[in-house]
Length: 555
Image (cartoon, rainbow, N blue to C red; front, side):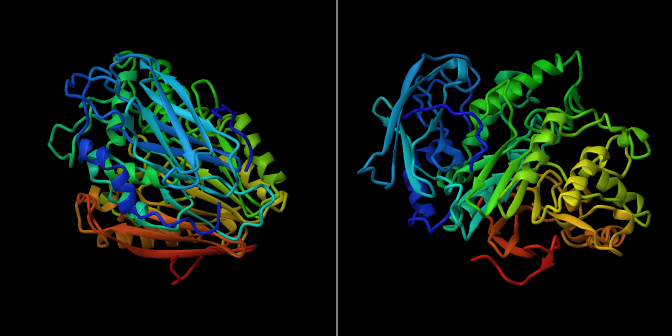
């Protein structure tokens, strides 16, 4: 039953059978032992390889199916990015129990160097709202066992959907303990990854990397992107999380190059680094090969998922179609209606989906912030410089023209549609900015909060490891940043929560009565076994378009 289906606009929940992280790591023990932390096989490796050294993953759950992924290393020379090695057959099987006593789906696929020996299987004809286990075989080798879940039927009265929310995981900035914390939980239906799954940068010359990228250079070629994806897949905490729950992911800029747009990127130089078209094609091909997403080069990444009558999730691609960023906030072109962040077709798809959705909650996977943000003039030069380094923009202006603030016509179109059609319970879920935020979305910021004209809310997760304000300033967390956060909230009364310092993850729950997010902060991003603590929780009551702080914690 190996079927390939399009990115369906089709649409998780009773408690899952118990499966501890210990079980996940036991079944994937060969992976962790082979990979270690910060180690990756290079194209010159000659040792006998672990055929499944890059683990297993699943993603894009539908009511009747889910996408399965792995990568096989059939021979020592068939290393990621090498373009070498034979074509081989890999078999797969799916069962409703981890002992595979009753296999319900199975098949085999061919793979080879043309797709870097990666395997993607779109399994169909599964039962909705059901936990499944899966594994792959190559010869006598058996992969780690993965667990996944299908979405509920479109008409199911779902009472709870719970997900981990993450973004911005820079290998060189620390370890992925945030992924380990999520893999430890027994309550997640999926993980929402909002972009910057990996970073393009080379190894810094100052020795500041906690662990070094492979390859050591900035990734530009297809081989570079493949090797970098392969390295990230060897992280044992990321591997454990992938093996535990399905991912729904989109890209932001660092999957290709910093501040990417349709015709180039801030971190791309022609002709020294080749053409942008060639580099972007290489990055997108590697992403399609190495990620559990229903995307192939030349197709579209934006797509929609349903979770019964409770929620609909629209995942956006805000890099492929966007116009070039303006140079500064005083450039009138930021208001030009011909400039776009989403592209005309995707913007129409988003609005049409919001208008016609029958789900109670409209969730939007949004890689860069949509809430308007102005920086106050009371900040010091040092603080402004640090903010510029953290969230943009270009040429030292303390204002982020890389997010929706730099594309005001598209934002106005979305906000007007929400207001004019009376669309309720819209929640933008965002990453990118290496900080935690809870915001209301004013139709007109100039009259807010006098008329409280919020058309939705935005909840922003912090970075897994990537630098934030205290890292850039070189100060202790929760010291200087407190004054900066307070000043920004005064200048932006729709911003209710802001944390510029923490690294970690969020947990989001959707229920008929509310959307609830908990923010968790790691104690030390450089510690692979770091603990985490909850630092804040906010709640969005149904029908309110408001965020409210709560002391309740998702258990």
